[in-house]
Structures are given as structure tokens and as C-alpha cells.
Length: 624
Image (cartoon, rainbow, N blue to C red; front, side, top):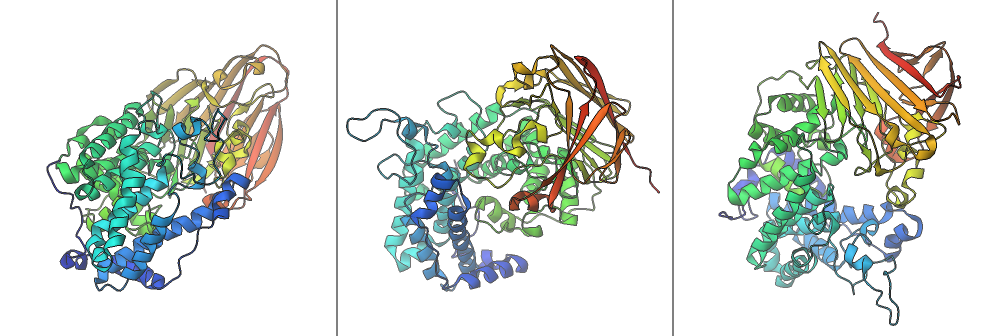
């Protein structure tokens, strides 16, 4: 590290802050003025207990996250005005956060492997420690996503306003240094056994790794003056991040879906930018894996603000456009830049409705970089996205009728395993859109609760294979786990036709009695999609049922179904149809889809054979 960490102007650099755009300054000052003198909300113990008692995470998290958002905007407001007007409110916010028993949210307090496995401290008792319902200050400090984000927030407040705060109260400034060392800088160096680090095991790590490391790196770089071992800490973040990259597929596919890409692959890009600030090195952008990682989001883009939303991703995603534009220029990815220009022009899924600020207090380096490193004016760009994309590492296919048009059919299918991060049981699932309008969909996920990530996960309807576009075979649905996987896929493309064939038998339990079950997709670009299932069973316990999750209520007719008013599904005779209206009662999923219901269509085969084939054809309705 041959440079001092000075990515943005300090508080004392008035010219640097005055140079910000008028729109950014107006928004920040509007927020800061609303917060001046406002009483900070408490974080009572019973709010923390909610998760342990009833699985609710939102009552505590909403107040916790609001504290951090308020401190961020007060800091920006003070830096913009530079008159000391908000410093008392900022000091109050800092003090409250420093006084919190833990920066770890209730849903994560029991994730610490070593603490959870250590003997109980009760005299005369051995065995695993009981689950903690509140932070236990006698145990080692854990670092989760939001502890790291909180450390990053206080680091930025210290970076910008440390001297001004120290002039008013040296003890507050020193308290920030002590709390960062106690909660982040010291524990990160002392521990190798945080699961997300990937340093003491050989299992894949998920978004927690780059998300936390990109924030912890900031902490070490900002507190280089007061924490002597900062170079060791920064080096360790690099070593840990390399574990994430080691398991990431060369093709850049994100198994957690496009929403988690914002804190997975995109956090890697944050980390690379941060590191570049003190090394001046940009050779990482020449890595094929990094280039593919950045390009991922353009390959799973459907149209409007819709993306291919396997796993826990919602259908509509806020994309870090500025970060990806900076990366796209460094990697020379013109196709990515074309797609991002389309998003910016139309305001589709851009964080903060087109603003450089997301409105939250997370990914703060990214937000600050967005406002201080504005995108240059681009020449006019026409929409362009890949006509065909295949992510072999996660077995996901995406295809559209034309690379330069949002009209027509967009199709995606997936194989992979049922043990991916944020997994749904969905091998053989596929999505279909027409003119950027949903036709056959993946529901996504409801509001996170305790049940989302415990033994009850696969009892939730959004996780079950029978609520995806997959078959129920001999009355059995798919099971979770890496052992439940698709066979080696067979992909061919050429002459305007893309064919993908998947062996789905391995996704189902042994009691399903499957000898073979192969699903083949034939996508004729500009024409139609065909889905063909061929199967052989050991015996017939229950009729084969094909499940379809429909965006709009299907119109049923003999041998065919009208989907979303844009696409016919032809299935032929010999089926019994069943239609279920799924009322979206959860506020999050209702907001994701901007409607109150989805529909599950079930086609049940009437014959009693133990082998057979089903051929479905999806074609556009005739244009008037």
C-alpha cells in the first residue's frame, strides 16, 4: 500500500464539498434538516428478543437501521454546510451506537461457530452453549453483515468529521477508535473461524464474504493512524475475499440471484475500488472472472426492471448503475454499458429512483463514490443485451428473441443443485416473459423471518418445488441439499435455435421411484418455446402433475391456456386442469409484484403409464 487513503474530500476541504452537484446537496440537506434536534429512538431489549420469541426481525432492525441512516445523512449535511450546525446531533448518534450491546442483529447473534460450539459457562455443565436470545458480553465478539456496515459507517464519520468531533469532545473521538478496535479491527484479526471468512474450511462462502470484507477494509484504511496492525488486517481481508473468488464460477454467474449480486459480485467491485485507492493498481479488471462477474447483471436482465429471479431474489431489482458503469469502462464491456444506459434513461430499477444515494446506510463507499465520481456524459447508446447467455457454473440459461430488442419472448431455465446459497427447490424451473411482461414466474421470497433460515424453510410455499414451474412426480416434490442436483446439462445453439436438456431425476427423493426424468427446452428465437418432458418410473403411485406459476389468471381452453394475454401454452389432450389463486398476503412479496395475487396452474396427466412424454409449446398470440 503505497498511497494514503484519501478517496473523498475531508470536512476541512470546503472546495471539495462545494463542488458536489446541486441536486445531491439539496437532497442531503433536506434530510439533515428534518433530523436536526430529533429525538433518537430507543432499542429496547424486548425488540431484540422478538426474533428469539416469535421470529420477527423487523421491529428491531427498522429502528437499528434508521439510527444508522440518520447518522449518515446528518454527517453529509454537516459536511455540505460546514458550520457545525449538526455536530451535536451527530455526537448523540455516535454515542448511542457505541453504547449498543452489540452491532449484530438478532437474526445473526447465534451464527458465531466457535461461541455456539463452546461449552456452557454454567459451572458443572458441559455441552453446546444454548442459543442466545440477547447479546452475551462474556463471549467473543462476532462480526456479521451489519456489524461490519456499522463499523464502516463510524469509520466514514471519523474520516470526515473526526477532527471536528475531537475539538468538541476528545472522548467521543477516542470512543469511536476504541469501539472500532474492540468490535471490528481486533476480532477480525484474532479470528479465522467466522464461517463467512472461508479461512478454516473448504466450503463455498456466500455474499457475506465480500459484503463484510469490503466494509472491514474501509475500517482498517480509515483507522490506519490509530490501529498499528492495520496492514495485517487489510491483507487478511484480501486473503478472505480470495476464498469467495475461488469458489465463484469463472463465467460470473451469481447463484444467489440478481438482488444478492448487489452485495456479492458488486461488493467485490467495491473492494477492488477501495484497494485501488491505496495501491493505484487496476490490473484486477483484466481478470476474466471479474469481467464476467460485472457482466452478469446485463445477462440476466429481462426488460423494464425485471431480472431472472431464481433463489431469494425478487423480480425487480435496484441495480448499482454507477458502480457498474465505472467497472464497465475499466473492462471495456460495451454491451454492459449499453444496458446500463438503457436503465438510466428509463429509470428502471436504479437505486434511489435515479439518485446517486440509495436512501439507506449500507454500501457507503459505493454511495460516496457515486456522488464524488460522477459518470461522464455518454454518447447515445441503443439498448443491447446478450441474445444468449449460459452460466455453466450454476447451470442457468437466459435467451431472448433479439439482442437489440425488448420485444418478443425472453426465456430462462436452471439446473444446478438444491443446496445453493438462498436456494429454492427449483431444478428444472423456467421463466417466460413476453414484451418484458411476466408470463411464467418465480415468486421470489416473502419478508425474512426466523423460519426463512431454519428447519422450517422448505415448508414455506415460495421455497417448495410444487410452487415453481416444475413437476410433481409420483406425488413427490424436490428435496433440499447439494445431493439433490441436476445431471450434466446438454446445451446446443445455432441456426436461430437454442436447446437445453436437463436430467431432473436426481432432484427428487428415492421414494418417487424415478428411473429417468429428462426435461428439454427448445427455444426458437423469434418464434416459440417448447418444453418436452420424457420419463420412466419404477411404478405409478400418483399421476404426473406439471406445476406452473402464472403472473396473471390463465384463460383455460381445450388443450391450451392463454397466459398473461400474450402467450398461448398448448398441451394437448389427456390432462385434468386445476387452478389455484395465491393471495399475496405478505407485504414484501405483494410490493415486489405490485399486485395482490399470483396463480398456480396444475396439469395432471390422466393416463396410468409408468413412462411417457409431455410436450408443451408456448407461442405468442397473434398481433392485431
